Structure formats: C-alpha cells, structure tokens
Length: 296
Image (cartoon, rainbow, N blue to C red; front, side):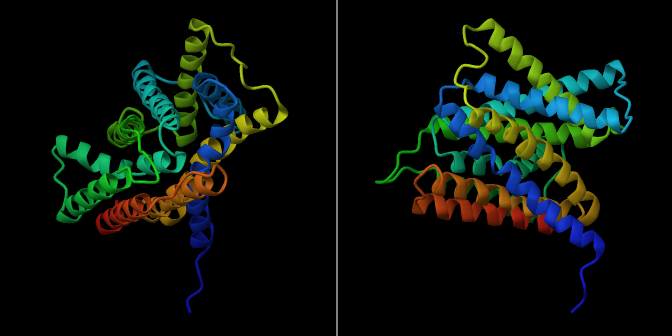
C-alpha cells in the first residue's frame, strides 16, 4: 500500500476539521438563543471576538491592512453578503431544526453553479444532473410528516443563506480587484463589516447588548462561535485547499451537515424523520458528485 504524502496527512484532517467546525454553529448558537439573547448580539460578539483574534494574528504576522478604494468597496459588499448569510441561518433556527437549516446552507455549491449560468458559464450534464437531484432532495427533506411540521419560513431563510453565501464565493473567485488580498485579510474585513452592522442595529433598537448573555457558559459559547465555526473553519479550509486542492477540500465539506444533524439530534433532541434522512443523503450525494465530476 502506498504511504500517504505529507500534503495528504495535513490536508485531509484539515478538510474534515473545516466541515466539523462549521457544523458546530448550532451547538454554540442555539443555547444562547434559548436563553433570550438576540441574534444581533450573538453575531456581534461572534464577529467582534473573531476580529480581535484575527486582527492580532495579522499584526503579529506583520501583514499590511492597506486597501485601495476599489478594493474597500468590493470588501464592503462581501461583508454585507457574509453577514446576511449568518443572519439568515440563525433566523432559520427559530423555525426549523438547526441540523436541517445548516444542511440547506451546505447546498451553496449548487447555487453557485446556477449563478454561473447567468454569467454565461454553461454547466456540464453532470452539474445539471446534480442540480436536479439536489432539488429533489431539498423537496423531500423539507416535507412535513406525522411526526414533524416543517415551517416554510425556515426553509426559505436557509436557502437565502445559501444564496448570499454563493454570491460571496462567486465574487471572490471572479473579482480581479481583490485577487491579491490574502484569505485572512479578506475574512478580517468581512467580519469587521458584520460586527459594525450588528452594533449599529443593536444601538438603534431597545435591546440590551448583553441581554440573555449572563453566565460564564454563555460567554464560552460566544468564544466557541468565534473560534470554531469562524476562525478555525476558515483557517483549516485554507490549509486543506493548499495541501489537497479545492476539489477534495470541498468534498470533505460533507462533514458539515453530518455534524449539524448529530448536534441537533443528540444534544437538542430534534426529530430526525425519514424525509430528512432521505433528502439529506440525496442532496449530499448530488453535491459530492458535482464537485468530483467537475473537479471544481
């Protein structure tokens, strides 16, 4: 048997870590929401803590924060999209099981493929097949049955989260203006935009910034959100992409919905219906097939 290369030994675990850590969003976010913390406060602290940590690392690495006005404009748009994706996902948690909501966001590669159609990049038959099967999977997993009622509002919020994240990915890949900006700096500015927006929204409302965030466990959940689904997930994705390539790193993203479903079922007691199981398996298989067959 051929021994794994050094790149594989680093890249594959990093790819798995990416999927698992992003799938932990419900683990840290749901308890805060149940305690009465507003989504704006949760995401402000999540982004704010992440910005402080990431900014410190960038300073330590002596990276330049300098941007042109054109780059700043594009990063502002990216920040708005990144922020909207998180906001829609956490709002979806109010209406449907967190595992299902997080799984629907995982379908963003299919949404990217559909967006590329409008940019006159015609998909191959493999991509069209994956798109059709994915939508069949979504229809099945979002059907109510005798054991659980699926609220359409939560489904549309999750799909909205996937859509704006797909736009985020497309702009990053298509914009030459920000091509020279590192992943870490791009993430730093995207999170900074989010932190500022949520702070403004909190100030404009009557909600106390720390309402529902009182105990040590609450603060640990906020730090967990900032570290694992935000910084660690982003950093490990970059490591995996550099070592095993974007295709294999993307395929390992299947650990995201698996983790989210396990967290929702085992920790929060969310129902795992036959519809959800069949729909998720179909969608995950379709997305994985699309990534492997197109090598993108």
